[in-house]
Amino acid sequence: MRVPFRHWSAALLLALCAGLAVSAAQAQNRYDRGHASFDRGREHVDTRFHHNHAYLNRGVVVHALPARHYDVVFGGAHYFFAGGVWYAARAGAFIVVAPPFGVFLPILPPFYTTIWVAGVPYYYADDVYYVYRGPVSGYEVVAPPPEAQVADAPPPPGGPPGPPGPGPAPASHELFIYPKNGQSPDQQARDRYECHSWAMSQTGFDPMVANGGVPPDQTAPKRADYDRAMDACLEGRGYTVR
Image 1 (cartoon, rainbow, N blue to C red):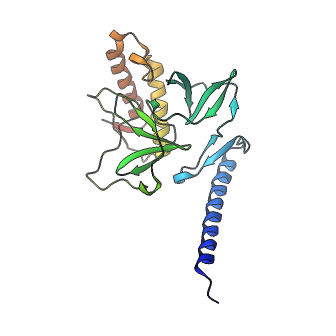
Image 2 (cartoon, rainbow, N blue to C red):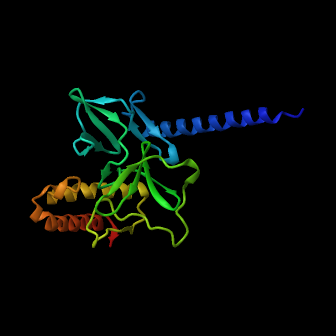
């Protein structure tokens, strides 16, 4: 008996949805096995673009921020960023929120997935999209791109280059890093994040605040110190830095 096309289409759609549900469940089960403290009521595994990392759910309230976090002022409001998660202050505590479009960070989340939109690299983590805006501005939170324009692979040779390293640098010293020991993308992201945090703690230069958080007459030398610390940290972890 011939099955009407509309019935076949509905069956195919159900099969595809079931396949996606199984894929998400498998990713979450893999995370559960490796992270005994995973809380299904408060956390989720983001499987979009095969990202497969766990984050706190939007709306979850915490009473203390992670030790290492960024305080970002945007539109007169404070937002806090740590480990790919965004928070806002709420009645003496902090609530997990979606960041506003247009807010900037000097670095990417510790884990991210690169996608390509019309030849431009976008960086994705926890339903947030980041675009590199240059060595001074860093990474901007942007609106989700149209699904039809998203590609997993970079453009052919001759297309636009990817961004330099994790934090802003002077225009005369853009930071490009190359793994020498076959480090995975996750490891590269973790190393960039940790080296940035270390360089900031060693030099007192914080790219997230005006003048780096130092007197204006010290901005240039402190920026240079920060760049040297980043170079040394990344080279010590097995990268070529240019």
